[in-house]
Length: 456
Image (cartoon, rainbow, N blue to C red; front, side, top):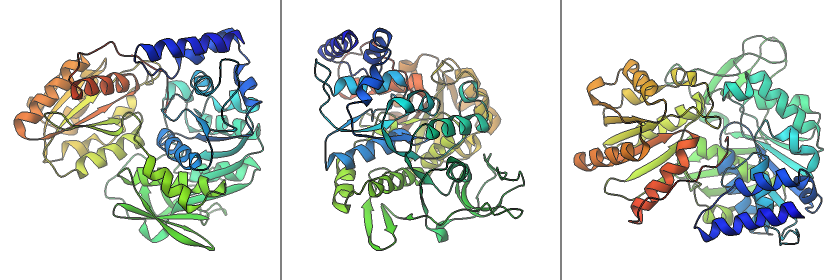
């Protein structure tokens, strides 16, 4: 009980100071009461876990909004997905005596954290968004990530809702010995790749031979098959088709749903598809799915917009495939633009920044609408060098290691050029950037930024 009291007290103090901490209360509470998550897990009837490399936070936020249409939930939809973030989510939803206000939890769980907490929670559904190479210093290569996911899955009896377009998710489904439901995009919407990209999972994990693709969506998501064994993309039980600002959601035996997309980009359409598929697996109605989409508000850094002298859109980047998706969204914006790119190499960012050379920054360098780049963060010089080698003129790259100064410079350049600003940053720059931009929008003096631990 002491851990709950201390955690609740920290939450209360932070709220008084106008802070929205998502990890610190849980971190302290777990040090005092290491069994806190198990204690809370004993109170809820079911947990829906969302894991995978990219899209966890957006999918969790969307799905929790859909479930809330039917019942209250405990959720960490703002992205703190380690044990301390999960504990903080429970602390937010409990009384001072430790009694929870909801019977269901929708939790984003980091891939490496899943095995550590799976036995403590009654996980009934696990959603895996995708599996990409990410933070080599934490996860190692893809086989390490897959091993962690399988370990966590096998500690539960959960139904799996998997991205069938991803061969690595398909492998999880085949190896898990659990009930599996697949989602994926409509087959005829796959396309031949426009550019050469680094693709993970190019080899069949069943026999080791190269996979044959008849079309791609992005990354290794596509129409794959192995010509040496029977490893093949499954027919998705839940199917999506991107139609402008809508996603046509199909499930055999039920009328199609035309879902408004509250976020843009193909990768975000996958997040909506994942959330809607999980909602159907939970037995939610179309009305609840529509209601959750209407209520959705983007978490920090997920194409979050700030109306300043030059409009700013804030993006999180963290690995090659996710970065490529963001870059594609940026260059698709046909307006004149300035880019602020912030790279840190702290623990939550990933110490190894070699992924910058795998991401397709050439796509950004070739954008004729991009007039200026500001680089910032501890690795400001690294990303400036990367952009130089990508072909962007060195004379139009400015290195400003201090984040606030870099953002201000980007806004000033955007204002002078009549351009919008796209800020692309890694984890430990994300929340300070969002706070600074919010304070500028609200015309308040900047305050000290509160860092939070999250790796999704």
